[in-house]
Image (cartoon, rainbow, N blue to C red; front, side):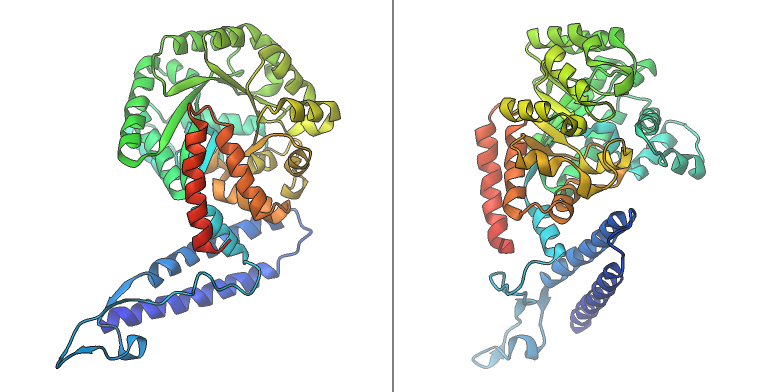
Length: 439
């Protein structure tokens, strides 16, 4: 057992050395280069992974620890085996400002909700390759990797359609829900509302009702087994036109699952003005469905105005271009329509935001606009919800208290049937996490 103890100490020593080296290299990065923020996040992710491993090692129990660690414990004439946890730093001791790694670990531990998320973009690359192989779709590594190298929103949409092409059977949707659940577990997301875009699947011969049935069945199993909650929003999509959107709505209206909350309008914003979908959204509202939209991501503030005036949506995805219209920002403040902020996604597509520190979310928040934080497409953009919150802390000067306020706003922006109960659950865990991490 002594060898195991020595192995643990050796590994901790190696981790400390590597973390110090990574921090040293990261400190050499220039602050004024467009690539710097992305590289810094890469360093932070690796450092955080190492620190997570270190925490696990520090929590290991050690049979028969050496005397120098716990002393010589005896009972009468017989020495007893001692099981002792390797000591950790007193959580109440802190004489400096938290390091970025401490902040990131704290954010990761916080319970969260997410409401602007695409199911197809939660499938990791390994699972995606396995789905292609299982379904007899041949593609080279070079072709596969090239699909993930895009530079604008249209390139992203082509990648999205490529991911959808991997799905050939109803059973694949169970795998997709499992990938989403894996993402949620890793990031402590306890509730999510996820977009599903059915049109391409239907065109590929998959039955819509069966597709939803498979997903709902798996969602219910996960809720029963683990307590995580997943709800679905059906993307009627601009990409295929208004007639197709109405067809998708009619399919949704035939469903009887409480897990299906409503519809969203995504796809190529410049090709599908909101007013073209007025009839679709009116019919959805009259049927009691929730309605949301992607707007102000690839088009100006007028796109957001049309979403409000014609479609009367309950939430707006992205809303990045609203900053160009002070009257719109004031209206959003007064109406408290939630804006689903997707910081990394907006920088990636690059239409209105080129660097994290220039994102309007800071001004929105300061001016009282209702904002909540989301990833949009975590596997495509190689991001998770922890890093989205951490970027607000690092690049936009959000305080810990403001981040927690954003988590609360995220809860109340959901379509959960009992938001008070959900917040009570989240807040209870936040209190525990703050105590543990001394924040």
